[in-house]
Amino acid sequence: MVELLILASGYACTTFIAVLYGPTMNLKKSVWMILVVSVAFLATAAQAKSFNQICPKNQGRMLVYGVGASTMGSVLGPMLDKRLKKRNLSFRMWGKASSGLARPDFHDWPSKFNGIIRRFSPELFIVSLGANDGQHLWHKKRWVRFGTKEWNKIYKERVKTTLDKLVGKEKKRAVIWVGPYNMDSKRTVNRSKIINRLIKETVNAFKGPVAYHDLFKLTTNRDGTPITTYIDVKGNKKRARARDGIHLGTRASLTLITLPLLKLINKCLPSAAAARARRAKTKRDKKGR
Image (cartoon, rainbow, N blue to C red; front, side):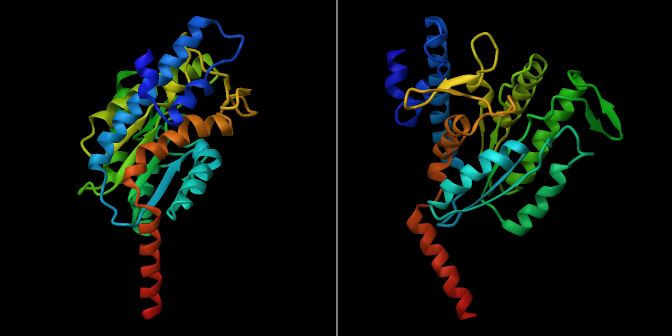
């Protein structure tokens, strides 16, 4: 345990404190949460090393594009935009509330990707899909019941199709997939657990510059229930959930999603100086035409 704490440096150390439940929590639960978050962030660090070895070369330019549902549109996207702008990088996003991969009759994400790529030419995609997919699946004008082998097979195929389209045939674009988090509902918890496993298996098996951020693990207690509170870096007990009781709150999202993502992609990003030089050159070229 001591070795884990020593190895997990930087912001990860503060996160160990941030997800603990507070003074009312018993010792066993406290140790468990420290262990889970420690291992998760060590895994992220190891994954970052592997991911950065294969992420595309961007030569001083980088446009990051986020696709997802309400989490991307209301919390994660704005956070990434603010922090990436500090690196003089471009960020665009499309957050479609209630969307996912199970209901193409409502919003067909794979059919939108070619248009996004043609218009914006992003080097990196951040995908936040899966939280709304715990339902029957619409496939070839019929419903496929959730939890069946057929559902699992079709869903993994859609995750694979999404990765194929975003990465491209030449695998020049990188993808980070943010998994669903543990929601405060017994029915939703069980379904999110299944979806998390299916997406994670598909991403890990994919041959290309992709990575998976296991948010479900970070938002789950030892007994399988979702976290509801955490202690921030100042030692104050805070609600983990937003007012709706479902989504993660802003500060919890920063600690558990945004900061790990930035650490994961850091070496894939150009330096601020390189980004500024590239943009200045582009402006000069446009004026000279």
